[in-house]
Image (cartoon, rainbow, N blue to C red; front, top):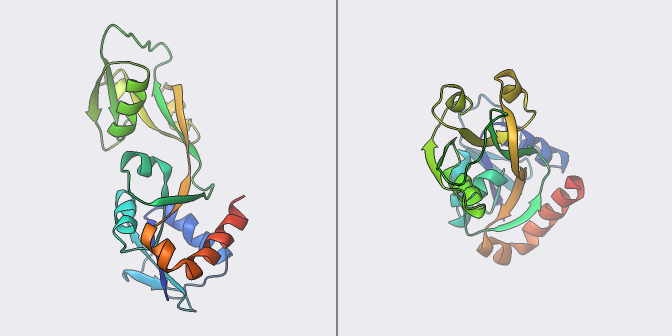
Length: 207
């Protein structure tokens, strides 16, 4: 019985495929330039397909994939009814509030926040009782405070070099982010014999 993976496109997929190779699966027909949509390992035990990161949870929740690998930020922003079983410790970074060093949170006025993650931003500022106006930004969010569009931003920070080069700093760390292994709830029951060894292999190298 073949186990199907949904992988988030980009750096997560690259690292996830490397992990799959490390735990013993070989995908001879995969290259980054390939136009194929589904790639199967040489034994036929597993196969994977690539989708945009917000869609990984949907494919797994609805059963189109048995297992998914996606960042925790995506699961927070786009919750899915799945089992989150492992922290794979890849793509490690932090979700942060960032802006100019002299930015002050003023509880008597709304803070204008630019972000790609409105759900996470809203939840965080609600938790500290800070009223905000959210501005959804799909591109380089660092531009928002620089051009006066927002007071601060909520975004993923890896090295912090982009912030530093543009005169910005981390004002508050919200949470740690890394890629997680998620599993469809029904698949874990009816395909447990096939899925558990895969989880065990991932667990052994994710420590």
